[in-house]
Image (cartoon, rainbow, N blue to C red):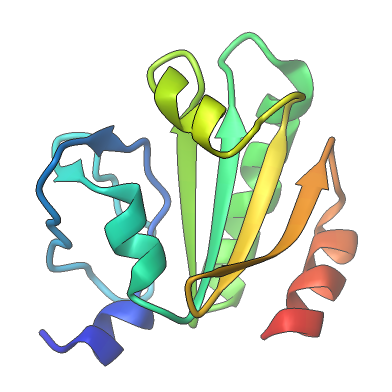
Length: 134
């Protein structure tokens, strides 16, 4: 699978990090659960395109409320990669990306951070932000 086709796939997953850069084969038109696959967050960001990362915790009510919003966003925007990162499982990423509140969404375009979104956002608000950068 080429890098361009990978960018067009939808990812909605809890990441398990490793030192290797592995981007698996993904199915088009559905969310893919990658909890059993070891991925590098930096590898996904560096693939280019638009990547939305949701930093969340299971105990965070606004984070849980974002789940259906992010699922709809992922399905509606086939060019975007949506990734969920549980802060309790990945404290190094919390520090690296300076996450101070939950939920925090980071939007990358072509490997560059273009937007930091803190707190719950409606689907309409989030889509407007994405439209600005897509």
